[in-house]
Image (cartoon, rainbow, N blue to C red; front, side):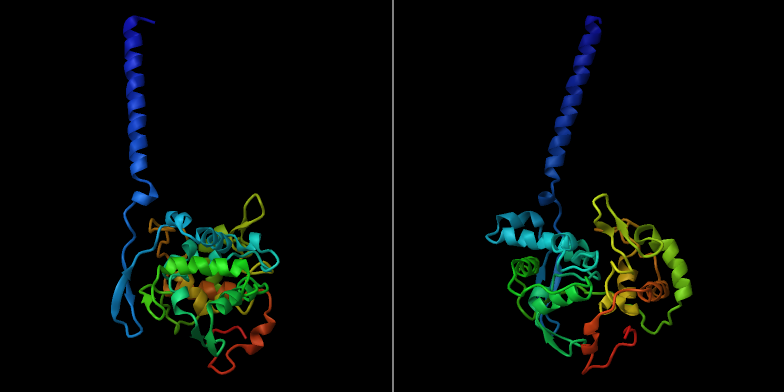
Length: 305
């Protein structure tokens, strides 16, 4: 190798190292803590008057909090419910199978207002229910399992996460985020057309027979939509229009570039209603407690029983 070649290589190596150092600095400047803040959402009182603002907090702040350990445990339980609480979950679902983006996404069952609005009246129960009862209702229905003890560490941890996510929004006030998007409930479902849409838009993740998709460890990546490992007949998602509203605004995932999950706005109201009618009426576990539902209230037209 000539002296000139060695000098050229030395210069090239120096340039590469300098570029790597620059990239490292750029990466350090773009960590999640330095990312632009999430958009501010309005906080409204019971009369609809704007009384403040809210931003979804960064998870990186949790560990430094006095109760950070319990908040992080609650976050993990909501993400990995079936794996961490097998004696309480009777199917393959996690809380966040339906409460997407760790409960931070509007129109996907966000937890943002959970802590500051419960107890609240629920027509299915015909009375006010507490947050603990609401969570245990999901264990019994959506996860086809058994409730947690109200004072258990697991229950308290999940509520601690929801309290942290509420960021001190006063009881009775609400962050201006919807629990579920609007759907036209006057539409007549066509399950035959829904089966076709399911095959085109849903089966690649949820399986041809609604069996879901598991990873190499046997945990569900995409939840089963019917069968013994899915939610039971008493779950809200077993209702056509409830399921359609979720589908319209959240499915299929990764169809576009909308953050955080790439929902594409692919389906129309009719599409969503048709595919919901198809898969909600497939075989799924029964729920004996259904005899107590809507005793004092008008039953929704899409109730399965």
